[in-house]
Amino acid sequence: MNRSATRLAATCVLALLALATAGTAAAQSTDYLPSWNPPPAGGVHFSAPPVDAIADLHGDIADPQLTVFFAGNQFMVVHDLMDAFRQAYPQYQRIYVETLPPGILAKQIESGSLVMGNLRIALKPDIYTAGKAAIAERQKEHGWFAETVDYVRNPLAIMVAKGNPKHVEGLKDLGRPDVRVSMPNPAWEGIARQIQASYRKAGGEALVTAMMKTKVADGSTFLTHIHHRQSPLRVLQGESDAAPVWSTEAYFQQEILHRPVETIAIPADQNSIATYTAARMKDAPHAQAAKDFLRFMQTPAAQAIYRKYGFQTVAGGGHDAH
Image (cartoon, rainbow, N blue to C red; front, top):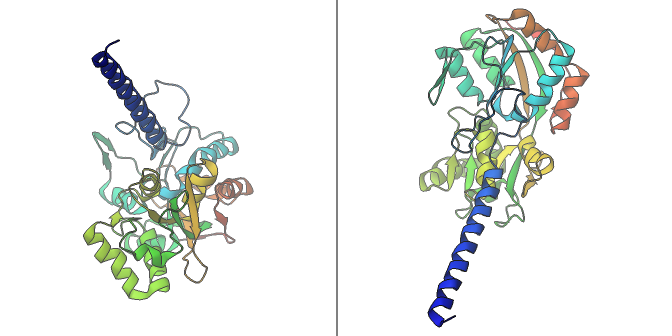
């Protein structure tokens, strides 16, 4: 083989290796994408992440017997929880669940529909869940709820890439100019309020201003569109160095999916713990199913599923909402 042919062959081999490496990287990157719940059985299965991958709409959209609007960060619980509910109440088999940010779900209730791409969904929820304070605010403003139940609690944590390359040790480090942060958008994410309260505990108003104004302006704080999936994905794909998240989101990625991330604990005196509340809608289309689901959320079976995914249980019961 002459020198020219040798160089050509070497170039071809290098090109093939580059393509193979790119293909492997793409496959690994795609592997991080949702959805992470098992799909429903039957029918034609089609998904092409990231173009066609619907991770926050679950179950039967046609003539459901129960419709639940869940606070989005509980997406990982939905499959096990609904399977257990169907076993406990076999009369309810067609169930539809959304796990979008609670602010988006509230806007969906107010407007009467959700538009996602070319799809319009005009289903009314039987159950709406969110943080306890958000439920109280919406009840005061709209009077939507007939009954509420506090069912789990969740503290904050910081998620970083495995090895913690930016050496993030706490909330103050998120204010450093060299640390790219994925931050929930206060416009629709209730967690943003808790995180800002924790910033204030850790570094005063200076840290809040740095995170929510200075770093937003220079692009080193990214405000999310779907926090409960977007922040972990940005860390995994190297687009953000750190993300303040609910501890269950870090637990899910690290302990359940075994992704290359680490969790930085936030001290108790700087942390903010949310209590999640499930509310039965006054105009629930399936009133009895809503009552049965609210009772189910307080059972040992439901609580065990939440503990499996890192949530903290909460004592207490339901009450009429006035």
